[in-house]
Length: 166
Image 1 (tube, rainbow, N blue to C red):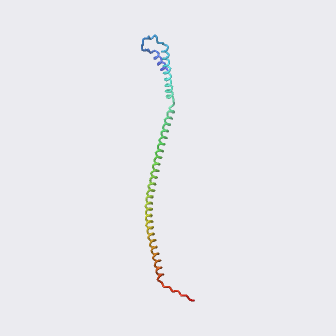
Image 2 (cartoon, helix red, strand yellow):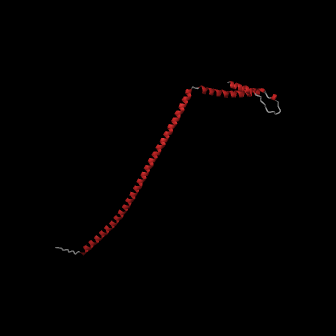
Image 3 (cartoon, one colour):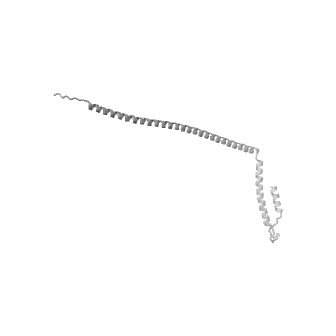
């Protein structure tokens, strides 16, 4: 508090010169100046008192408080580090999972391409068999027609005899 009092006394004893505008220094009310000085003193006093309170509070706190604060800060740092490690592991697990999925998709694509080739081959074979079946069917029809024709020719060339006994 002595600091504040000495500051106040130095402000109070200071000569204040007001720029001259044609009026004399006697015309300025001394009470106004003292009032302003008192306001300045109170503002500075309040700020200095606050500063001294916090300074005294910090200096008088036990060492254990600071030690506990440092331990707490270290715990927070460890927790953050653990979370960062977990996040990295999750990212790595996600990368592994994505790589596995990509491999699986690639395998499925290869199997799909292989099955498409097999299907195309089977379709070509089926088309060949259908063409062969159509050809064999037409040959069979031709043979049937020829057999019918030959049978008709044979039937017409046979001599038949009918006897009636009465």
